[in-house]
Each structure stands twice: as structure tokens, then as C-alpha cells.
Image (cartoon, rainbow, N blue to C red; front, side, top):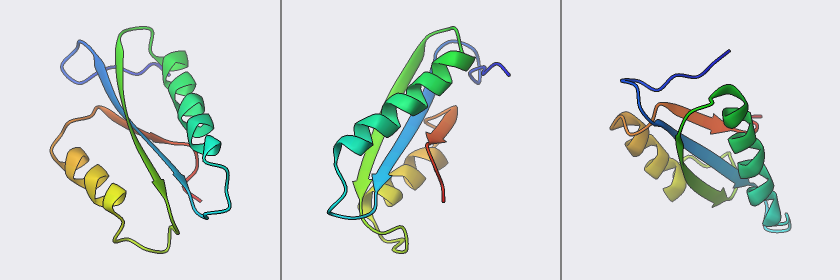
Length: 88
């Protein structure tokens, strides 16, 4: 499938990367971002603007600052697409 920006022009993409524990290597965040960006670029030949939100902490807690930021920006219509590596 091919991705298309709403309204044409540049595809605006929010990439959310998260590790859940303090013992996990923070480089995993960069790996997640690279994978997500590659997936988008494989499906969209045009211009893309990526915004990254990185976080660390248990997914059991919904009062994380990065989650609130992502929700607010998505609800405001800033992005055409939100990409995460894994939602499990």
C-alpha cells in the first residue's frame, strides 16, 4: 500500500518509541525509530517530516508525559500517521 498525506504535500508522521525498563539499552529507542522511518519511506516516495516522541517506563501507567503529549498532538490533527514498532 502507498501512504498519502491528507491534503497533499508533505506526509507528517509521529513516531513513538518506548522502552519499559531502566535496564533496557536506550539505543533500542533509536533502533525503533529507524525501523519505523524505514517502514514509512518504503511506502511513501514523497517528502516526509518525522517527529519523534521517546519514552521510558511501564506501559501499565497511563499518566506518562510522553503519552499525554502524543495524545494532544494527534487530537490537534498535527499528523497524517502515527507509527510505533510494537503495541504489545
